[in-house]
Amino acid sequence: MRNILKLFIILFLTQSVVAQEEAGLKRTVLKKSYIGLGGVRNSFQDAKFSYTQYLGTLIALNIGTSRETDKYFWEIDFNGDFTKLSAKTHPFVAAAFHGRLDFTYARKDLSFIHLDGFRGGGKWTVADVNFINFSDLGNNGLNFISSSRIAVFGEYKRKINDNLSASFSLAVGLFGLFKEFKSFAYTAPQNVLENGKFDFQDNGTQSPFSLKYYQFKTIGKLNSIETNLQLNFKKIWSFYYQWNLFNYTTVKRYPLTIAQHIVGARFNFIVKTKKRFQKQ
Image (cartoon, rainbow, N blue to C red; front, side):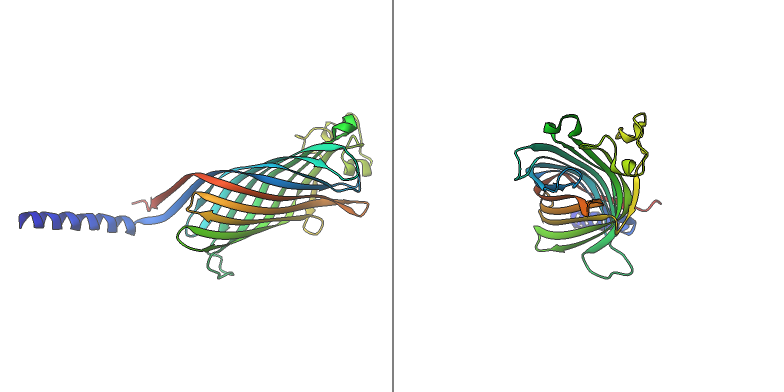
């Protein structure tokens, strides 16, 4: 009888501690850090160089970290890819590198949208750089485009079963800063030449680290669309397809366009759930 009484007291104290902890629980945070690898199909067209569209397929790398609660979600994400671009009209090949750093923040408790599984917010592409080098053009073969932009972001996620869930997200660019540096046969950005500001002594036309001559563009003149379709398996693996399109300027009625198709797999090497409590 004494042993039964002791067991009852221990169970009562344990339940009391758990109840007190849950009462003081502020939120539960799901932490993830991941690395992904996939294939990318790039498309590039710039009428200053050629009316021909250039295409290439190779490798893409993805790395990042995220935090998710029952109310909000944020993510820091880096994407990099390398391709060899070519056209059907001639044998010349270009090497292309694209790198991008994004910060996304979204909330589930939006008052104007009542849809279970939906979250909305914003996406800041902190830095987006594109290097393209046509070595057969010698010193005139390098093209470099840099941008930073803000987009409205939305995502819908649906649970399929205990092991599977699927999500689709869309980001549409609202405004941003853009700069095109040396571009093929030109030794200065196109907008600098058109405005008659070219100067061989002006480092702002050559240096990728100079903020001079960046152009501010808003939606309408800026076309930036990013989509992501993702299948998640057991919180460890994700399989995704992305389609992105970006252009911000037009030459001879042709928009300078960079587009991508990316298919890949992501491994969450850190998955932790942490409880945060109210301060007493």
